Amino acid sequence: MRYTLRQLEYFVAAGETGSITLASERASISQPAISAAIAHLERELAAQLFVRHHAQGLSLTPAGRNLLREAKQLLRQAAALYSSTAEEGRLRGALSVGCLVTLAPMVMPELCYSFMKAHPGTEIHQLDDHQEGLLERLRRAEIDVAVTYDLQVSTDVSFERLASLSPYVLCGASDPLHRRRTVSLELLAEQPMILLDLPISREYFLGMFRARRLEPRVFWRSPHQEVVRTMVANGYGYALFNARPRAAVALDGRRLHEVALEGEQPAAVLGMATLAQLRPSRLSSAFAAHCRELISDRHIPGMRPPGAAKRGTRG
Image 1 (cartoon, rainbow, N blue to C red):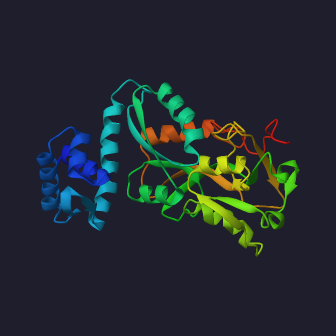
Image 2: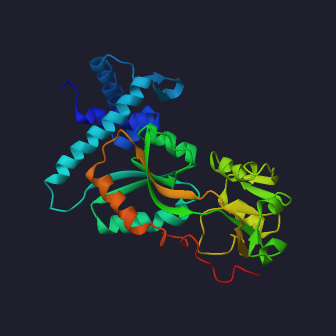
Image 3: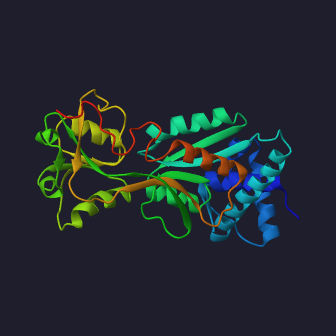
């Protein structure tokens, strides 16, 4: 073998950061050392791994993306060899975990803290993104696993179900809808909607109406969950969500109320997504087992479980 694990580590740092400068900071090594490692790998593998841009910017070629995925797996296997000689049962190493941006504030703090507390030799590097971004990061091997929904998951991604979250209507105290126990999509289509405007997520919510040949009145769009919740709390309109925060208030302290949707609506399935062709490491397998213990239809970290009524949410 005419390349080293260290050279692969430098290549992975450059591939994930897209920059010689950032890679050198991350690996605590000089920029010429990063450049030399990349040049050596390109010579040995007879392939161009990066397209160089101005100001040392880098983007991976198709060959580079393939190598990044394989290099990360090889480095994980090498780390597993080291871990296997450590104290029996003790996990070591870092895991890159992605999470859907709307779930991350509720689910990830408790989920990650409890895992690292149970395994002191581990670290979790968390990355939050929308659904489309998470799936692409899995394919680029930027994250090992994603805690997210099953929305538009293709065959190159493996998904394990943990819990199902049915959609519901969120409205403010001044909205007459909050006095109802249920509401139909037909009635909602006549009301102003505050849309959580994230890739794939918006298609999921709008698709509920279009399946009934309805067109909602979208009054405002925002990719930020708390902006949507605060606008709803202030009476601008209603919103649709799946996750149920434990606090029934917006960031400005105004009350929020949940109303059930009438009829059968497609639930968002919460679970773990991984790249199908990537063999799980001992560390990622342990994290998956931890997720299975903490996330289910009966309990979800940071939020109320599906179907649980929130006391005081009816006006």
